[in-house]
Amino acid sequence: MRVLVLGASGATGKLVVKQLIKRQINTRILIRYNAVLSKDIQENPLVQIVKGNINVLNESELNDLIHQCNVIISCLGHNVTLKGMFGKPRYLVFDAIKRISEAVKNKANKKVKIILMGTTAYTNTLSGEVNSMGEKIIFTLLKLLLPPHRDNIKAADYLITEIGKNEEKIEWVVVRPDTLINHHEESLYEVCESPVRSPIFNAGKTSRINVSHFMTELVTVDKTWNDWKFKAPVVYNKWITRSET
Image 1: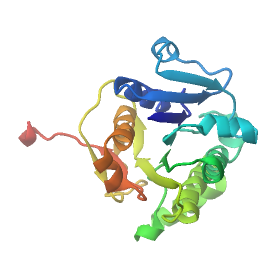
Image 2: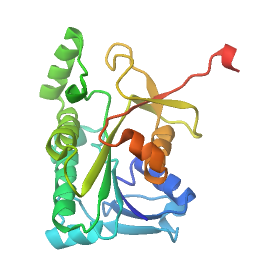
Image 3: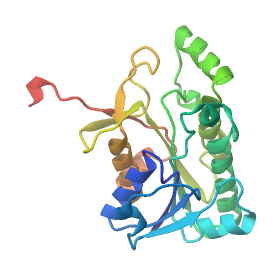
Image 4: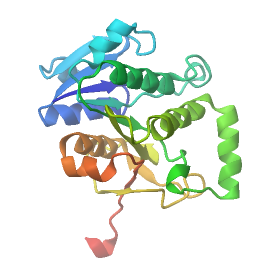
């Protein structure tokens, strides 16, 4: 098995890479030329580092990137700076997912699994999810005013509505964490088919390390993949009550 990780130098992406290393999985990562990697990733023999920008690779470079990869994980996201939020590229995640999907359809000689890190701000209407009036108003404003939100929605929509369930060479999962937080260790978490709380008015929290663990479970455990393929599972940290201790 070989896994390609996009956004591998980001806060969640680097944790995904470490989870894959821990399970002895060959991992190819694409990072920008100025990206900084920790020594344990940079020097690990299981990790192949490719430097470049996913959205400016030519066709040959893109084909080389996905060559022999069974799974492609996207942890791409916009930097939380004025330039990162409002500058170009406006559709970093969507363009990457679309280009990768097209390359897989055209060149891959086997089925490839795509895992996209999304957000609970995405509403999966095809599975019957609906928003309250207040949520609809705020999500509409976010889509108009915040380009990264629009990008994330467009990327998830592409997999769910454009690729769908009938593409011969692609299976996919859109992983939706709630408010991301940093913890050093994995903890209990729950995975739900749809949000069980309002992402706007009653948001939960999800540790990045728990997201990385679930993504790696999707890669390595057949039952987990079969349970969630073609779905957009929501991941929440599970807080232990005193009665459970």
